[in-house]
Amino acid sequence: MIIDDNLLAIETQLAQLFQTIRQGTVYQRYQTTKQIVADDPALQQQIADFTRLRDRYAAIADYGEAAPGFMQVQTAVLKAKRALDLQPKIQAFKQAETDLENLWGQISITIADSISTDIQVAAGNPFFEIDRRPHQR
Image 1 (tube, rainbow, N blue to C red):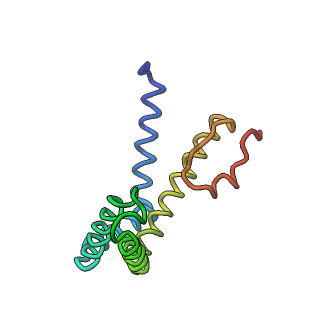
Image 2 (cartoon, rainbow, N blue to C red):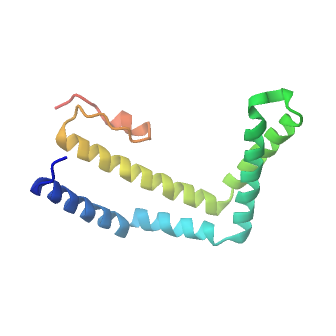
Image 3 (cartoon, one colour):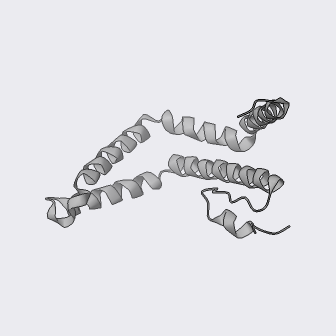
């Protein structure tokens, strides 16, 4: 890679973009909800319990129903996951995470489109594929 004035200008603009994102409401909401989840000891215990169950399930998943207690562990994992997903703080965090992911996807598509509409962007969100019409000029 050749380092020249163009590359330095791009790096400067990227640093400005990242700073703008960090100061924006989407990122701030993400950081706030992440901290709220991290500061809740009961929620952290629930996450740790779910993680242990998930790890137990992963250890026996390859054996399927042949593994002793497979159905009980699978059911326990699904119930723990559902209970975790119903927590308002987790819901708020997941929504903030999705909003931030969507923002990154929109930025990626905008940057790619400014170069060429032929560039395919893996935004990680299939909803972007609906709005993005490659090969249009």
